Picture 1 (cartoon, rainbow, N blue to C red):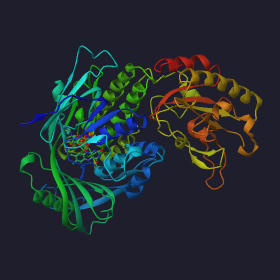
Picture 2 (picture 1 turned 45 degrees about the horizontal axis):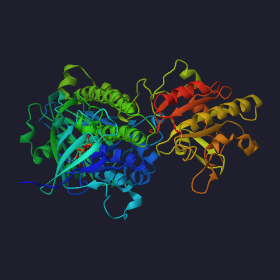
Picture 3 (picture 1 turned 135 degrees about the vertical axis):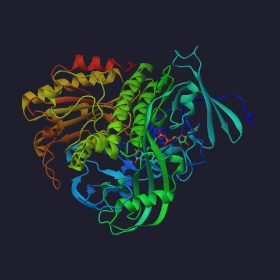
Picture 4 (picture 1 turned 90 degrees about the vertical axis):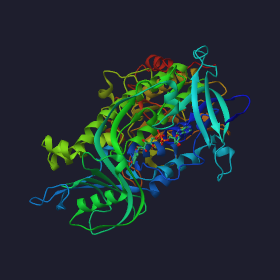
Length: 610
Ligand SMILES: Cc1cc2nc3c(=O)[nH]c(=O)nc-3n(C[C@H](O)[C@H](O)[C@H](O)COP(=O)(O)OP(=O)(O)OC[C@H]3O[C@@H](n4cnc5c(N)ncnc54)[C@H](O)[C@@H]3O)c2cc1C
């Protein structure tokens, strides 16, 4: 029987579960210096993960945190998909080896979807990279972060209705057991990041709504000895004997097979030998000798969503705790991590006194919609993979392949578009001002040249994920007196606005940061033509910050990025784009009369400071 420790421990945020969602939220809380803790049932970090597909959007998030290098170096990069279908005239029975032949190749993603690649890396390694970012300053780099308490199992969560409306109250109690000893926490906010069987969700009485289909799939990570020519590519095989998806794993040797099993198969009855035998049938006439199986599993496909995502805006569900679906489109880990990414900075701003508690409503609005879309997409995608459904609906291998490629933007994580809210201000003229930017979607990138050191770089590198809002000003040609005067006037207004939301003791750019993109010939522009707003005095040494000004110009060794064209901004008119800390576009406007609309926008969710 569990014994009890004395007083509950108080933390501002308690994260239940150190999976993808919890860790990503923790990276933000860490950056905001929030008093948080993460409790995890396992006795240490994840060792073998199930997920491995990392969307371009997730790579972009790692890049914005400044932690993409290891991920990109270690991962398998998915560049091409090969589609295989039955050889015409061969046997078509599911239990007879037929023949397969390659129908065609396709690019894994269209170039304009993202500049980052789609990669494959074990979830355990991804988690380890996130853990590496936590509490960096206060620990020996080899030790676990003090913010994660392992071997701590959450048993129940309750919100105190009497104090739930008071933002300063520690209104949530979380009961845990640590090595047989009961321990309680009192928190202002709790994140239920505890996966598909979430105790947090159950403890709140929330239900998962949805269904499960009769489609059963097996998955195995294997070392194959084979003469199949595309074994190191992402491959979709539609054979008479079933469907099989190959995902090559990092490290050049291991591959993952997702294998469709015949209708009526029961998950509990599936053995490894069945999966291996089915793989051999599907690959025939190519040989498929499995030298070793590293890991395998089987699952029935279902799509479910929690009926509620929060309790009193105090406890929030994220990731698998509030949406589950099939793993084939490689979405779960990514969408879960992105849930954590969405809520982390919002909690950071609230707990730092920068934004009101009501900002959290945008988590619900934005991520409920994302979860619903994910479930709908997965239902459609799963049907496409189902042989019986394809036969009944006359879906040809070519149609299947076309649909698969078409889904690319969605599966890359780049189709997310948030609805209008306090932090997404959609206007009628947005596309006239910046044709290739969509308010509510993530801010695209283009190559620019940094003014201070002539470095060619992607513009998003100038917007690191440090919790700040960014005002990105496309000023046009500052050699043109009219454009220069317009920039000067706008900068003075923006300075007044930024000051009113920034504590007088903090750096001028610490809440609202700024980035300037000029279209002039870089070598002809002098420093005194850049308004001071873009070179604020900041940091320990009170130096002028030189790194916020960029040119859309030819670089020495990397060509011209044509950034104005890439964003669809007219050089004469210019544009002002407000970008959220998570890189979603919040507002697009012109540089004329900025004071009132921009102030009103920030007043919608930022607290004034003195
Ligand atoms: C075979 C397979 C392949 C997959 N492939 C992919 C893929 O390629 N790409 C992709 O994006 N997704 C994939 N997924 C889905 C992906 O694994 C999940 O969607 C993802 O892990 C969800 O992240 P999470 O943080 O919400 O939950 P999890 O990663 O499940 O993390 C939850 C954490 O909470 C802890 N926990 C649970 N209960 C408690 C408790 N009571 N107290 C304390 N701690 C607790 C757990 O130990 C765990 O560490 C796959 C899934 C499967 C099954």
